Image 1: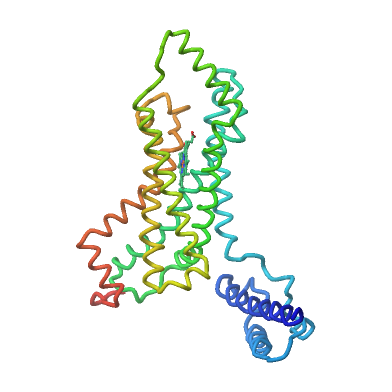
Image 2: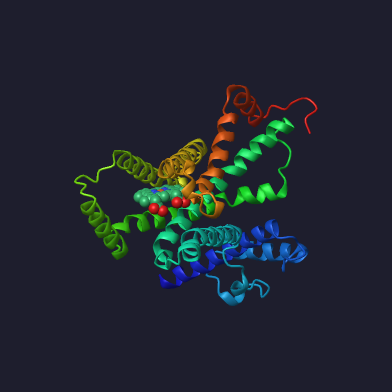
Length: 336
Ligand code: HEM
């Protein structure tokens, strides 16, 4: 039993190697590919032979050129992880400058306690929503290209093809950061700094002889944006679960497209609305433009708003119908 399990693991490994080989040959140029050309073909044939073999396969039977340990780790995740890391670093520096450096320089106030939670809780949702927008941006660009060319039978540029091939990874990273953001947000009232601030606010109230601290505008703002955030996260969770191979196999192609596309845009809409309602009127209040920089929620909502607006334009009947026809195979005469 154990032997059979080991054998199937080894076979899985060989199958993976083959897959990696395909990916590597697809993704990387032949210059950088270690195994290429004729060698790759031979390797593929040997492995396929091993996979079909009805007897247990030992590791030493594998061709030496198939170095299991040297296989690239998570090749499909390299680009999404790099994008996520660069976004996180830039948003972190931007928020640090506004929320920590500015008070220190202008008022000699040390707000560095904000870094672990408050600054992080701007970096996480900002990166998350930007990654989510980058999941749907290539689809919108591809649609514009198809409309422009009047056909679906011409290749997308390489960079667009590569971008489209990593949308699942970008979406999953966005979901991960959104979950972290939700946990960080829910931890707000547990923080000691929050309790001290509450006490100071209460004391100020008493000093000003105010009995009621209720600000209806603020209450509504918060109720709405938290609710939109929770709904957004819920929809993202459904999309993430539906992208698991074991779940997606249960759907037919149309059902899968329907979930990934329609729910995806719904999630983007809910999350953008969540960020904008969180901002409420802050975008017109000058005091929020610290050192002439716009508040982060404005920058965070910019790309998603562009993607949603272009998508809405593409859904207009005149363009939507033409796109539908192109996708069904229709070609404009003399199209490139
Ligand atoms: C359970 C779900 C969620 C809760 C409870 C929640 C809560 C919050 C809170 C409390 C803030 C204000 C943060 C602050 O004071 O600086 C906020 C801001 C924000 N949230 Fe969420 N959120 C949720 C889900 C999401 C999701 C799914 C996204 C998008 C991927 C998102 C994107 C944003 C953005 C972009 C901001 C503005 C951050 C800034 O630049 O200031 N949120 N959210």
